Length: 77
Image (cartoon, rainbow, N blue to C red; front, side):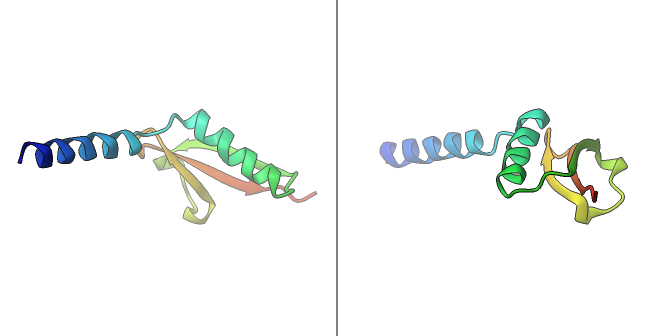
């Protein structure tokens, strides 16, 4: 029974560590790397508050416990 309780506690701790929110700048850098790897050159990534999001289709990430969003906009040349 003690082993079972220990396993449950360890799983709970591991889950909370995996679900830790990322800082916005770190997430933005990861998204930017993926966009550049796919060959897109003209784009804008911007960190905004939830109130500033006008089009949910532009949201590519959420950070700081869901209080901010990262929006993507393709810039045509």
